[in-house]
Image (cartoon, rainbow, N blue to C red):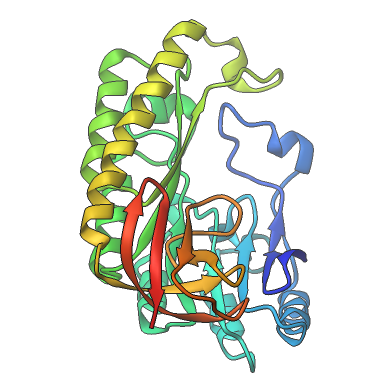
Length: 294
């Protein structure tokens, strides 16, 4: 259990990872995937709710693998269904979903309730097949696009956060151009861009490395691409109504923004800290917006 503010908390549902991505040291540091027993998660959630927490973010290295070690298959859906039955639960947020384990059933559960923010953090890392294969990501570009299209169909107002790595060994200009076009086409609400960092002990460590100058240039270019995407999103958001949560009396986030990592909003008049309410967007620039609470 981790509190970021009295009304917001992170609830770790598992630790470790079995995915063995070529750039990542987490399996060496954290070990294999280990799901927290369901009863322990429910008990922690109850304690959070009794303490006044309004927003519980479920976290793990891969939340969509929850239960695979306990039940022989991923069982995040069952966990969510039980959490939704807890008395006093206000909102859940799902972080760190793995692309090929995001199911239609999960999307439909999200769409069926306002107790799960219509938000999903789904780190994709890249879209070009040659790069995904070298990364050992266990999914290809077609599968990623299919998953995102499904999410947008089943949950039309879904907000998607993702991360991308640029300059991974072997990434060609063609691969990078495909990534840029993908970012332009899919219009992610929040996005992190990271230059590949060489880690000893990983499979990618011994691959032929891309010069730092090229990595820097591609990172800047992708950030600029996303900036233009956000400008387009902001224009569409003006005068629309969004669900918001107050982190202070005059500032907070919309459902599109996770605590500590995403955008923020300011309110035109004071509200109760921790309250969840509807508000109208009256101004927007970059990842910052101004809302009128309704």
